[in-house]
Each structure stands twice: as structure tokens, then as C-alpha cells.
Length: 571
Image (cartoon, rainbow, N blue to C red; front, top):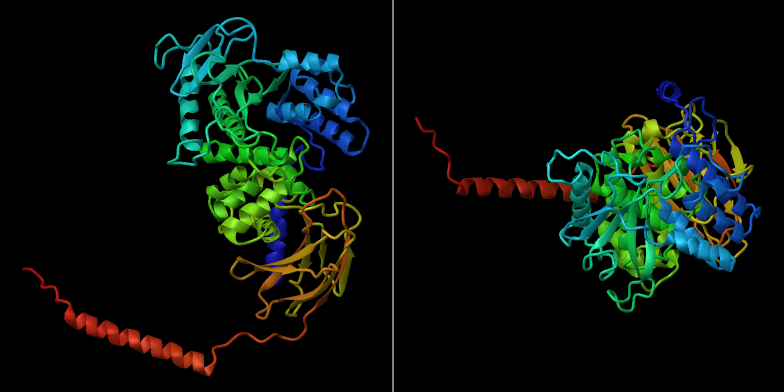
């Protein structure tokens, strides 16, 4: 039976394969504007990781991608008609490396980072927002002349924006919903009094586009005294979203508002917080506010293709895909847990320390234990979803394509035993990164596996964990067991299958060191469990207690029924 189920599974996965540009495989179709933009941007990040460009050169490329695409170095220049998801990332990278630039370069970007100028032709005020837009000229908004719903002298696109902005506020800020602190007030800057400004603007020349960005402008301590990293900010949204073809322009606006306004709310706590977590949460907020749009589906692949990358990794793509981290915290516990991390960023600048403080206080668990649980959720989705983890995990399958498979990347699969392996040849787990290793036991008549594992320990902070995930071929359900290696990185542990119903045992190797950037290696051996372990049975005392409880319950039920009136049938 195990063999038959395995064959069916292989045929099913093979039949669903579809190419995706952000996998290791090339595609034979035109690239979308977003794919063009982020493949080019990733080259810049890769050059920085490889030491091929200096911090100054990196800052210049980030600024040029956002404001002057024609100045991007030829090595990284994207194809024409490209788009980028979030300009906030580029602005933060530029700002974090601003001190490396010359005075002339700083002046150049300071001029371009300022609020859009000259002022727009029109403004539209809501309860909390002031929307700036043009209806003619090079900055005219989408469908600028359409004014029928309602016919009030204001373009319908602006009416829809006003509705979306207030709806986003109601979800993200109102205490009855998520209850984030509102962005710091800007006084009368931009117009009005303490209204949050949204500008529709095309930042760069024709041929490129950024969905939007949240720009930090000045300290927010006037609204939030003592919060040294809070900032006053404003939003820029693309004026017409010409590059969006997968959804309506209105939905692109709504999704971008939910995303960028979450950055504005983050600015009430710490706008200098970990950039990866900022983007994780902003992407997750798109889904939280507009569950029906599901724009995040197209971003799943980079993280599923690279589970070995550290949790906080950002390269212009993975940080968007890692929305599954705050989504896990939200769906396994609640969104207050995510917000609690942001509250802790006010006083704790290191994101790993924020996680540790938050999880210890709120869950009575540490970061390492929570991360181990996350790697299980990471595995049980896509075409491996069982309906008990991510709410939309099964819907992700068509959007995950990792070397032809619709789930997280498997480092290797063993089919003969004894088996052995190590971290080579590549994709060694970085800090809070992991590898998935399958042990196919479908063709055996044994009772599980025993693994001897050793993780390399070089630094005092080095730490390793092992999780076994078993798939029951009869019920289709998964079971996870979590294990922590000793201080030498060693562990000998068995994963039992006493009823011989398991077809695949997955070992998740977790690098539990929260800090640093070096890779760590490991090795292991695995042997089959040849003797059937004891199946837990009721003891004689346990059986007697169970029978006594049932008897007492029956007696109580009979006595109660005698006290209750008997209904009389009416003729």
C-alpha cells in the first residue's frame, strides 16, 4: 500500500509542474514587470554578499533603482518596463548606507527624497487622510476623467482610494481590530492638520514603476515622546499602476495601501527595525486587510526555494515571501503576538532579542522553540497541506514551484539504509535556517529510523535542533516531534512507526543560532528500527478507572432524567 501511494504522489506532483522565474529553472515565457525588476535588484544584493561592490556603490544602486533607473550600473540594469514591489526597502537601504555617499551624492538624493514637487493639482480629504493627485499632465492618475460613482467632481479612482484608506485605518489602527499605534502626526505639513498624506506620483521615467513607498521624514517624538526611532512619514503610490496586469488597478491600489500604511504604523514604534521583519509584516498585512485579493501568492517561491536562508534574510524577494513567519505567529496564536514584537522594538533594537523577549513573556517559550514549530508549518503546506496549519496553505500549491515540486525544497531523499549525509554540497543552513531531508520508508517493513546527528559547533552561540515530521499514509495526517542537540551539537534519536503506516519521515535540521552570518555544517547517519516498539496500552488500573468513570456518568444521567419532566405530546 505504501508503494502505491508513493507512486500516485510522484505522478501527481509531476503533473502539476509549472515554471516560475524565481526558481532555479529558466522559463520560456516573457517576464512580468515585477520579475524583471526583482531579478535585477537581486543581482545588486548578490554582488554585495559576494563583496563585489562597496557599501557606497550599494547605496547608489538602491537610490538609482528608485529615482533614476537610467543610472543603474549596466551589470544590474533591469530590462525595460520593469516594476518593483516596495520602494520602502530601497529607501531604507539607501538611508542605512547614506553616510558612505559623498556630499554631492547625498544632496542629489535628498532633493529626490523630498515630498513630490511641485504641489499636485488637487487634494481630497477624509477623516484621517489627505490625498494628493493630478488629473492632467505627466502625473495624471488612472482613469482621471471617470466620475460617475458618485458624480461628485472627484475621479472615481480617488473616491475608491479614500474608501480604501479609511478601511485600512479601521483594520490596522482601530482598537476594535488590530490596534496598532497610528503614525506620528505631521502637524500642517502637506496640508490640513495632522492628516496623513498620500501622494499619487510616478517617481521615475516612463519604463519603470514602483507600487509605492513609505518615506520617513522627521522624528516622531512629538507624538510619541521617548520613542527615539519613531518617524513622521507619508506615502507615495504609483499614479496609474500601468505594470499591474494580474489584478485590477483598484485592487493594486488597495493592496499597496494596506502594505505601505503598515510601514507607516511601524514608524510609530521603530522605523529602523529589522528590514526583513518590516517587509514580512507589511506583506502579511495585505492578506490581513484584503483577504480576497491574495496578491501575495506570487511571492511564495523565493522562501520555499531557500529554507536554508536565515529568517531575517532580505534580498529584494525573500523578505516578501517570509510573510509566512508573522502569518504563522498570527494563525497559530493571534495577531497581538506580532504587534507585541513591534512594541518591544521601541526599546530593543536587535530583532532576535525582540523575538526572545516577546515569546518568553507571551508564550513562555523561547525563540528557538517557536522557530522549530515554524519549520513544521513551513513544510505542511502547498501540495503537502493537511488542513490543520496555514489557512490558505493548500491554495499555495500552484504558486510554489521548487525544481518541479509544489512544496518546500527537499535537500535530499534517502531510499536505502543504512544512510548517511552531511550539509554539502550547498545550501548549508544559516542562522535560523533549516534543511529538509526525507527518509523514504515506503518499501521497508521496519518500524522507523534512528539518527545519529552531529552539528558543527565553533562558537558559543552555535546550537542545533532536529524535528521529525511523519506522514501517515493511511490517514494523510502529519505528526511532529521536536528535539534539541546537546552543547556539542550531538544527538541520537529515533522516530518510531510502530504500526507501519508511515511512508515518509522528514528530518528538519535547524541551525538555532540566532546571530551571525557564517554557515554551519553537519553530518548524520540513519538506520532502520527493526524491532517493533511497544504500542502504549491501558494498564489494568487505568482500565478500571475508565470503567468506574463511565459507570458513575451513567448513574448520574439516569438520576437526572428521573427529575426532568417528560414532554407530553399534544393532540
